[in-house]
Image (cartoon, each protein chain N blue to C red):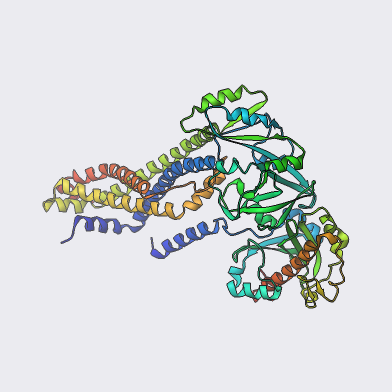
Amino acid sequence: MPMYLLRIVFLALLLCSTGTLPALAAVGCGLNDPDRDVPRLFPESTSYLTSYSSIAQRGGESLRKKIENRLGNRYLTLYAPIDAPYTFYEIYRDKKRVGYIHGVNQKGQFGGIQVFVALDLSGRIKTFYLQKITGSSAGKFRDAAFYRKFVGVSLRDFDGFDPASGKGSGRLAEIANPAPELDTDFYGILRGLKKNLILMDEFVFSAPWGKP
Amino acid sequence: MITPFQVACKNLLRKKMRTWLTLIGIMLSSWVLVSLFGFNRGYESALNRDIDNLGCQLMIMAKGCPYEAATLMLQGGQGLRYIEESMVQKIAREPEVERITPILMQAFFDPNKGESGGIAGFYGVEAASFPAMKPFLRFKNGGWFKGESAAEVVMGYEAAELEQREVGDFTLVPEKNVRLKVVGILERTGTQDDGTIFVPLKTLMKISGTDKITTIGITLKKDADQAKLENKLYQLPDLQVVSFSQVKQTIMKLVATARVMVFSIALVALLISMVGVVNTVLMSVLERKQEIGILKTMGAMPRDIFCLVWTETLILCSAGGMLGIAFALIFARVTDLLVRRILPYAPSGGLVEIDAGLALLTLLVIVAVGLASGIYPAWRAGSMRPLESIRSE
């Protein structure tokens, strides 16, 4: 058998082996039930495509620093090393791409908050969804009326507003905390939204590859 | 001067495709064989490790009560049955018992988890007795509770990851709205402890409004008669005894059935490769009849011809065997994943353990079987009559 054939067979087998190895890194934030959640967040969708990418794959340490600078926070998230995979859902209506869904873990007052955003192709929030939040009055953050206040928000809205301190101006500064006793959660959600938008910008909208 | 080994190599390289195909056949058989041997060894040690990691040999619970967190979650936190805490002291007095620990499992409904709410599970344990059961638990940060009634929690690594908690943070018990301070985060263990939130037993009893427990973990003294203790425990009313050695035996029986089937397949693969070797070498011998005849007329003895042909078999089997072992080592992880998909229960950790001894044993088996297959073609070659061979076409 010619050597080049052997090499091809060996490489194919090696690729199969590494491709099926489970990721040892921390698990990123994914939808609990995408088949149910995607049509709920994107009613016009007919299908979706899931892809995974990490900061390590897309730019490594320099990209992490860039994201942290834009975020104004040294730690992207707890327990998320640079190779933690982020889950991207590309949403399609028939064969046309209509938007994206992406989620992040964010530290909250009594537990982790899982903040998901549904974005249109220009990067504006269509809706967002708190998959998990802990607290006796945390349900107020999951109210549809609260979600609606963020429709149309884009990364530009965070230019004049700091979600870490709550200081600034613009439409985000005008949104009232529906559960004042859970201030950490309120600002955690805002930080989670900003983090989502920055990650989507870095990984999708301003990335040279155009999509995750 | 050319050696018999070089002659054998040259002969094999004459028909490259046939040699490669035979080599691949031997390689596949060797791959299957060494992986099976590795699985045979790895599965049992992984199972033993999992059972050791449970920290106890026996578990006592009320009849019908789930004894592990995953089952509790699947049942939506329902189905818990309780036993009196006084039972702990009663069982601790048994001479076979070395350590004993009471456990209370509780599940609370969290409406803000997922689309329609979810279950948050808590594991009530004693800081005085539980850590001794699980000496392998190491802290990433912090340590065990300061007191048996402290409003504190210790989180497994994955639980802390999901809840984004650090030592010093607070967590909340859903439904009850009780705040608990995180005092310790465990290192990853690869067991169900990674996803567990441990609370002091008395604290969880107070939160749940119960003075009973759900489970008792028992570690036996070394050389204690487990069967004798089990018999005594079976006499206790409304209690079920889960013996992990029995669980292990049941699992091993299930696996043994699968193992017999897979070994049969490996045997068939070995037989096929044997036939392949016989075919390849015999074809090669028949094609070289005239050459063998000339060699004999030049003074080669039957033994020399026999050895020459046998060397070819040896080269084929050694090379194929080594390739198979190399592939088995490279793809041990893939084999592991495949086995996990097939088996009804697969313990954590590596299921396929291949070391140098095992690799050598497999190589010896393959070479021995190959040499046995090479006897007939080598004998045919050795016993050829020189003139008849030269005249043949």
